[in-house]
Image (tube, rainbow, N blue to C red; front, side):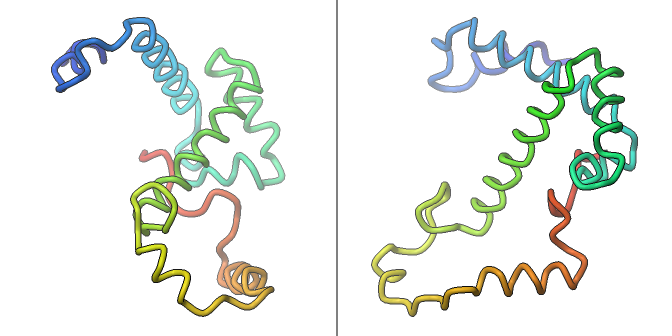
Length: 143
């Protein structure tokens, strides 16, 4: 093993003066996340939307909370954070203007033709027909 996060972060430029309490709280949150993920079935890890949209989502979340020694609210908070992180990473990969990762010039966007109203609804309808739009999107927790 490489050691804790504190030892790894201290090797990065500009991170040597980072507060030890911040590092400890980060390590604690990682342990909580690990215990929650370890309490999921392989199917739930592959398809996290089962924990949100499936009929048995509530009982699944309760089982995960019990197995990880956490409260149901902790598991739900973890799922919200996971979705927020997935959305942010997706936007960064696409290079959405105004979002993290930059993207195209704002002036070029201003001169582009505006999308018609209702376009979002039609895209969602097409995605639902194609079997997409089930909550969390593709991918899972990597196992």
